[in-house]
Amino acid sequence: MEAIIDERVLEWIDFIGQHCTSSEEVTKRLDIGRSTQYLTTDIISHLCFGQPIGFVARHEDVHGFLHTLERRLPIAEQFSVVTELFTLLASVTRIPFFKRLMIPQNSDNYGVGKILGISRKAINDRLAREAEFCNKDILASFLRHKMHPDQAETEITVSLFAGTDTTATAMRATLLYLLSDPPVYNRLCLEIRSQSPLWKPIQLQEAQELSYLQACIKEGLRLFPPVTALRERLVPAGGDIICGLKVPGGVNLGLNTRGLLRNKDVFGADAEIFRPERWFERDAKCLIRMERVFELVFGGGSTRCLGVRIATLSLNKFFVEVSFQF
Image 1 (cartoon, rainbow, N blue to C red):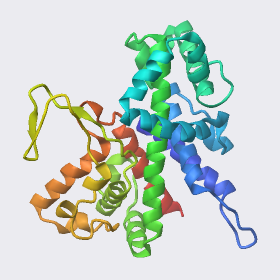
Image 2 (cartoon, one colour; image 1 turned 45 degrees about the vertical axis):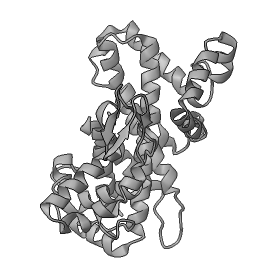
Image 3 (cartoon, rainbow, N blue to C red; image 1 turned 90 degrees about the vertical axis):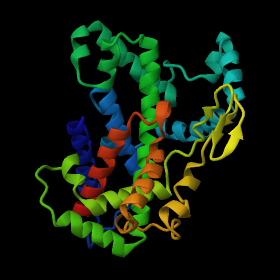
Image 4 (cartoon, rainbow, N blue to C red; image 1 turned 60 degrees about the vertical axis):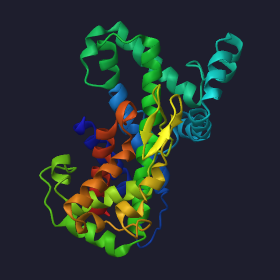
């Protein structure tokens, strides 16, 4: 997996160097926010299918996938909060006419439906050549473990939805914080450039030894968590005592991730400020508490992010390469 992410990050860095670097004579513009989405989408699609869709190489929104994603995600968030809406949609879309009207189809030529079509074609190709079940990608793993093709199509598309926008959001937000604070960015660059990576891009084991880099990534995720959904849990029958309050059974409880990650009792009086140094200043007991709350960025229990390792790899390599190269 790490080798695939290395390949995609290097392709992105090469593209930026060749097509987006200004000179004394020419100033070139780059929408870094959109460009990071191209990178993360190619990373996830390569991990899913064994090859990227080609967002970085073309540097455009292939098949309008990102445009559709940005339109649909706000709707999906509403459905995740008002669960009755999801139940209603599930009932209505059992009727074939409404299903064709409301749900993307793998025969569509644009947006999510087009990606579904790509997923379905990849699945059919694999089923026709069972030897490819041995490939080291997510689709091969699904089929190797006897997942039904329809479910594999859905799961692959969910992976693309869940893994692209969230990681890109973390990259963009943290990069903005870094560039808005030159002393912090200069310290990060100094730490990175003082090292001589054994590999290019840097390997995760090496990156994790760069303590200031890790603090910057944590601080960016803390202040701008990519997912702020409630991640509700159902209180069991008989109720429970939570934070000293008696909560009756059958109640859905969610958490305010953004509020928890800016809790001044945990992260200090300046919890609203991007300051990576906080991760070095607290005593061991406070630091353990900070780490426990920080882990909520990726959820917990049955809804903990399954792609946390992919996100961690991508973030570390991205910031090292950007800071080292530019």
